[in-house]
Image 1 (cartoon, rainbow, N blue to C red):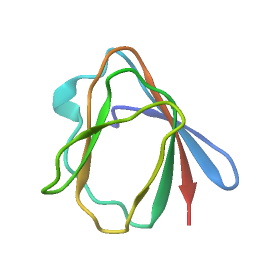
Image 2 (image 1 turned 135 degrees about the vertical axis):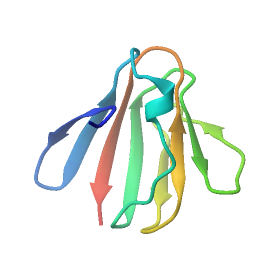
Image 3 (image 1 turned 90 degrees about the vertical axis):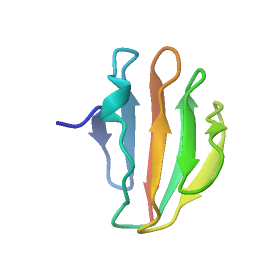
Length: 87
């Protein structure tokens, strides 16, 4: 079971992680396609690429996740809401 809920439109996915998300469910993984992420709501949540230092996901930030690149999300406070643009 995924630690998030998706709301899918034609070109984007709105993904929401609850404040109640179990941090152990936020595992390292790879995506099957290139993506651009826009942070809509976040408080202390972090993102980490493999072999890189985590960075805080701040509302309004945009960043890329290349296909097949190992990464993870680290739990913060409150809910996290992101918009995923498929490429």
